[in-house]
Amino acid sequence: MREAIGKDGERCDPPDSVTTIADLIDWLAAEGGGYALAFADRDRLRAALDQRFVPFDTQLGGAKELALFPPVTGG
Amino acid sequence: MREAIGKDGERCDPPDSVTTIADLIDWLAAEGGGYALAFADRDRLRAALDQRFVPFDTQLGGAKELALFPPVTGG
Amino acid sequence: MTPEIRIQSADFETATEIDRLEKSGGGGISTFTGIVRSDGDIAALELEHYPAMTEAALGTIAREAASRWSLSALTVIHRHGRLQPGERIVFVGSAAAHRGEAISAMNFVIDWLKTDAPFWKREDFADGSVRWVEARSTDEAARDRWQS
Amino acid sequence: MTPEIRIQSADFETATEIDRLEKSGGGGISTFTGIVRSDGDIAALELEHYPAMTEAALGTIAREAASRWSLSALTVIHRHGRLQPGERIVFVGSAAAHRGEAISAMNFVIDWLKTDAPFWKREDFADGSVRWVEARSTDEAARDRWQS
Image (cartoon, rainbow over all chains, first blue to last red; front, side):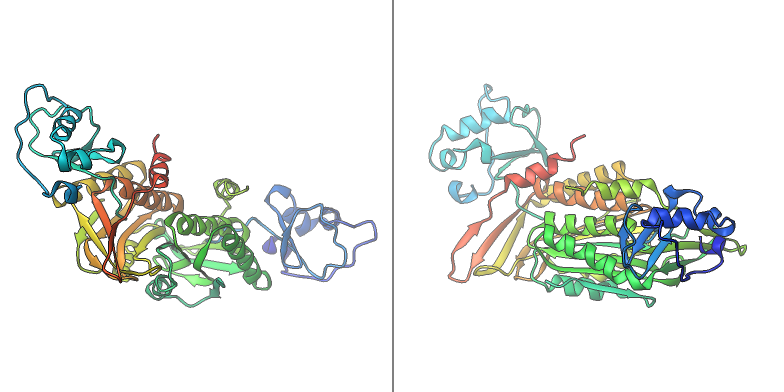
């Protein structure tokens, strides 16, 4: 994902219609290019909001950091 | 058990009617004394014939050694 | 009982960790150690993590284990960075009065760690190619056994 | 893969045993170590066994584990004789390509060993009294989970 998008973090300012993580993913993917590629398969995407795993329907609210990444493979 | 019987092994020559381990236990228990005490609770008795765990209905056959002991508590 | 959690690039001594677990007063100690496999043409394993989140994620898993079983000690160590085949990656060790508790806690922690700690493995091959390791659905199934 | 089985009165070094398992080529190593508990007024634990049978019984359990899971190493060590609180009694360690196999094999061996290896424990108390440890029905239940 990082390789598809070409960066490992950014500040962004989505429109008011973006309220959940799913909304934000859709909004970023609509930009096309690396985002569309990175977010093509939602089953292979995980989200952490302020460093906690959360489902995609979670409200962004006042969270400071959203992390999107592939399923983990540690251990 | 060993403390009830007062020895940790013996040779014995049961009558022909004794064919299984259960028969032998009954025959020994009938002697009374330490055997009756040691074999009072069959649920707390285990048998190994020629060094293998076996159920009480196993035929003695030509086995060389029968061991009777309480449930094991190792590990 | 405060779980011992470490995230480090340096190697660790399994013996030292087990010694600490054995002295915690429990009657049973159970451990799992993960090693970089030597099969194929893998020259090295590169382990990335998400530093801001890693310690919190391992802490959550360890505290959940400590709430489910009565443990006298619990240790979780996970390495990151570049590891050679044969090197240790991860260690989970638990101590409890009874063996069932120690084994279950160890198994719970490694199962959850596999799916809920932010680490990613990249295999670097002898020919210079690299491959990000794919998550396995069997790992999520192993974790979901623990849902109560 | 030939299981390593030892029945001995001498102590063993957990580190040495784990080192051997780690070098067997498996990706996962899982261990269980049993320790004489320090609770109560126990001055020592006396471990008796039935020498003619012990090695065969442990061998049967180890071979069954090796036939159920694909292991690169399996070690079973059980001590006998007089042990002080805090001393190691038993060690089971397994190595396999996948963690599930290593953990299951370790758990299988210790569960079966508890009910099917001819060892008996006697607790010797500080006041000179002794007590043979009673078998627990939970141990037979733990073993019977493995009946397939």
